[in-house]
Image 1: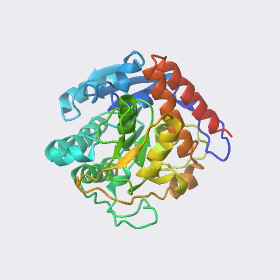
Image 2: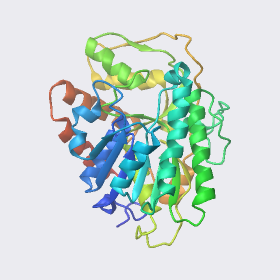
Image 3: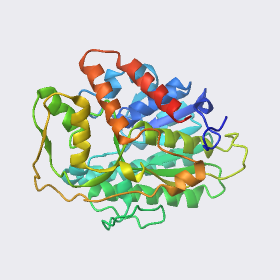
Length: 367
């Protein structure tokens, strides 16, 4: 492992031949994570429901050929334990979740069952095994008690998400903290959580997300409907948090060869710099610029369920601990979303497009 540009000594070669278990691998972020890990030579087992959208990145990019894919419900402990034991993983990334705020209002019980008991179940698998060395629970920037203030939230701020989705992820954090303190205080397993801001990237087909909404409108040559153009969010390309997750999990791995004997486990915010905390309307302006044509957007607030108007993260801990920095600004991120989307729409090789974007992203980190 060789450090570059102030980064700690980590590169993707760490994952070569490592056994990795990924929950939620059929989702948008999970599919990108599996592609990165497979490119790095990892032996990946994924456990998840069927892809949550149609079309889906998992299917379009043929991610199933890169991993051992097990279709199952994170709420089903027996099925999860069976897949986990078969995989005998060294590293676990927990991404399985019900991730949509509006859906959490429609079905709060399912949201809590998935996001809270799903976390309990994967931690039970780890507790009842002796193979795992590093665990990362991926949560969200929405876990914080949001006071709508202008500065970023730090990892020691109160956790109390407002809506069922956000609150269930706050509970997932607390479950992880409890297991870490109760069962892994001897550091037999290094455990961290990562709280990421809003992500964008090629292959996101979810409902109620602004960039997928933009792409659907562009395909139909319709106006883009923006429900809340003045809400401010920390937007970042999906490769940004995924790289941070991979770095945290590798650096906290007991035999990571970091050479420093440090305990890197903890709780980390993962978000862009302040200049990439955009109002939604400004984000759509960037999309329109890169897509081209006669696209335009209209403000149509629909009086939907409560969502925060202002949310920003303070990522000083991640930067100080690992020398981490963003690789791409938001303008570059939107450019890459459009590049992938047009490759897909034109019948191009989306796997090759993903590989090129991953390579370009990793090269940008060396500058």
